[in-house]
Image 1 (cartoon, rainbow, N blue to C red):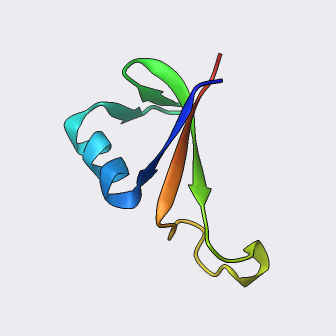
Image 2: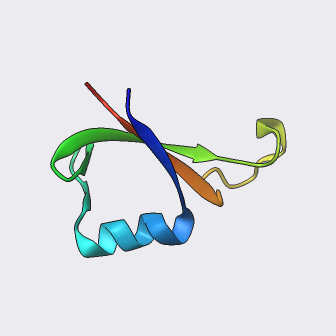
Amino acid sequence: MEEFILSKKELIKLFEEGTLKDKEKIWLYEDKEVKIVALHKVEPRFLQDLTNAEYFKIVFVK
């Protein structure tokens, strides 16, 4: 499965440019279905805001 890691700023830029689209139940990267995984530097039990990650992984769904 193809995947890549990007920063929060890069992720926001992809949404603004329309490269990454938020549909009702899926995300699309260049019209291909993907999953977005937040990557945190702290253990999950210490997280207060799950959306406040510095990096994200884009994983293509087959």
